[in-house]
Image 1 (spheres, one colour):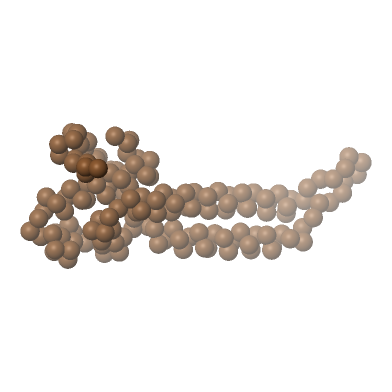
Image 2 (cartoon, one colour):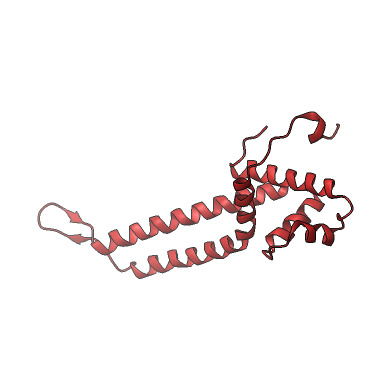
Length: 157
């Protein structure tokens, strides 16, 4: 099987700068998302524990009516569960995108994910691509394109 060549096999699309910024932001926030998920799961347990004793109260003649504490707990749980689902979706998309990358591409991503705001020049020097800038920027484009598609902000070819 021949390798796909971006230069000759198709006219590659430019990735808008706001998409590049979004991808960089998502990569930098990955560890924060993990911490947020843990904290939200703890909050969910707290809400469950806090309102465990709240029960339905009986009304006059027309059956049971929910307690306002139960309603509050249900709303809080729904909001927290929605936030957890959103963060887990983001984490899953980032992780799946990272599985598409090769070793050198992963090194570039690790430098970006570290959150030190390293310039591309510094990353090239650290990874030994200072003499082959074109190769570095081809890999960078490939990373951004693959992650953009996985995150749903770039259309597939």
